[in-house]
Length: 190
Length: 84
View (cartoon, rainbow over the protein chains, first blue to last red):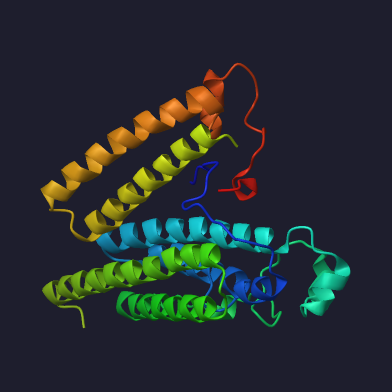
């Protein structure tokens, strides 16, 4: 189970509303390499993991991804706060306004809805952990591209926090992969 | 949100982040006793700061509300509404 804590993992801040950045940033909410994909991928893969290390790391990183999802939601909320229909349309968000008004929705930067085809669960721990490591690198790159698209120092600060978390998660998944392979070799499973 | 409350919240976020870092590290290094001690000390300090926050400003988790004078769990600001 999970218990909700009424606080963000990191103080998510923006200097000013910015619909253009909101349109791009939403991809880390509902895009292929976004936080929803990450959380659902890891929390779903844990059931076929053979060792306690891998069960724990997928549970704990998956849980942290839920906290990151909330940070992204907060940033989009702040970037779009008080925007009118006209302003949304000028920023290329007219279609979003028609379907969702100012509500958040799980879409990528071009408006495609989130799909389970973004994630996989192979049942093979080595295959799944390699996917997880690739996912962290793709998310890290996405945060870098997003940072390149803005000059808002507060937004960059929060995105940089999230970018660095991907590097740490990649490291931990790599360690878990090594341990799983050691375990498999010791059990003579090929 | 008043400055003092915000500063305490940020202190809690920083301590919680430290605990999370030790948590993930210890998942793949469960035998590192020194890291385990650092984790335990961080969590102890985090718990104290959270208790101070809850006593002065309201609940962080719903169960904290049991020690509040009334059902203030629903009171604002919600996390996405806070201006840092």
